[in-house]
Length: 470
Image (cartoon, rainbow, N blue to C red; front, side):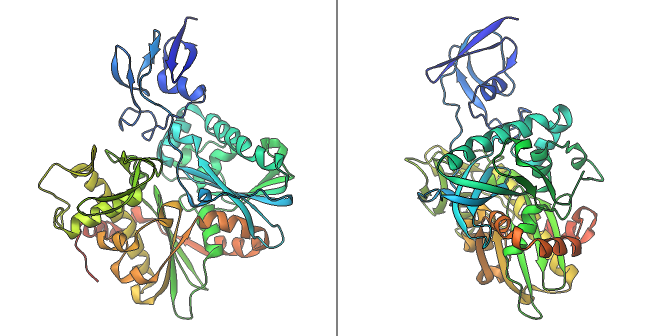
């Protein structure tokens, strides 16, 4: 078989002729996120080839020697787990893992108390197969779960190795994530989650010997899930949320690609999932990007972007919420989402387009309509909600006022919001001591299928608009 050479970043790669460029880069350790799953739709994998010009790495087949002129490594995603330097604890500890679609977070914790001793996070390498669970399910349906499981386990082994080398004696590992992520963690075909009736292969907790996965310690356990689209991450989050006052309810909202909402008190749990899409990760936004170097994280009109790194090169989810909030406040975007100009420049070379605003409208309306539908089904209004817990790395840095101004959250709930950060990781550390309560929550939780609910469709259209006031 003929081989060809790919030259980039002072490196030469030898690959088989005809190999897709993105695949060749991924197999040789170069991060090449493909938000659309390699279908060529998102354009996020554009690279500049010497003498050829711009190509999509996910579509271009390497048939001759080439030189890549543009950088191809993905930036490190900033998370609460990496805000400050930490010392790896010595001696016995258990390990918690939260597998998010964009970021994987780890924590070493005391087995007896659940107190977290050390945290770290890294980019989920599965983004090379798609930004969201839908694209990864589609890849799994065609190629099987093994490639997705393989890159994840390799990354975990690489990240955990230095912890044990530094003196951490890991005994047991507990893993959380949405239902699809846990299927892929076990290498279980999740294609059935992509088509009706969306049947999972398992929802209950799973345990194997750690050595079977190439991980240290005795056993690895994944927490139980609630439903096909409400996973162990929400169950873990519920373990760390306070029970509301008598006669009140609390809300847990995990803002992500597949946004999950749980409305609960001491007697019942109503939960649902809404397809927000990868908007909050910036995947389907023209200048969108994860919260990595160059990302605009917050914004004040007319020109006051806050960004990571040396200069702004794109907008991440929290920045997107701020920008749209400010444009609505100053009348640049009207209540329908329209603006006079085709684009608004947030920084040099970084613009928000009419199509971007529409993507945000679809995402925020899905989250808001799902939340309001749960309140209606429970027969309560916002006044009966005691606390709104916002979970996930995105929500940790979210400007709640901006979220309420855009209608992502009800303005009536603004003063009730508590930002938890990674509640899934915290819940993982709690789980060993709260296993019975976790099982009880999973058993009594009622999943609401919004796709079959006419009330949700009506609310979805209603909340597409901006300009709502308390």
